[in-house]
Length: 81
Image (cartoon, rainbow, N blue to C red):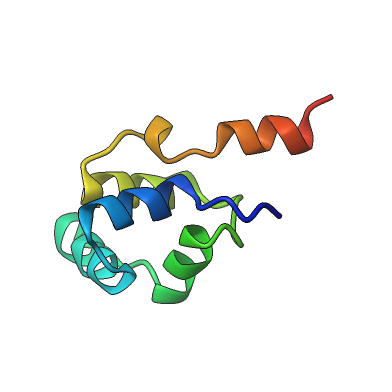
């Protein structure tokens, strides 16, 4: 695993949004739930393979596109030959 911060972590830091605030934004903007533990694992790069609906909830809450969050370069480096 890389020590490089995830794209999501960088966005949260840039916007001065905590993981708890992201949780609240998802809950209010999506009328849906995403566990704080899941958010933490995604933010910290410990969970890289998650459902598309999880990705979309984060995108809606932060008003970003999936491409702004997906760690494509990391995937290519570690998964493709």
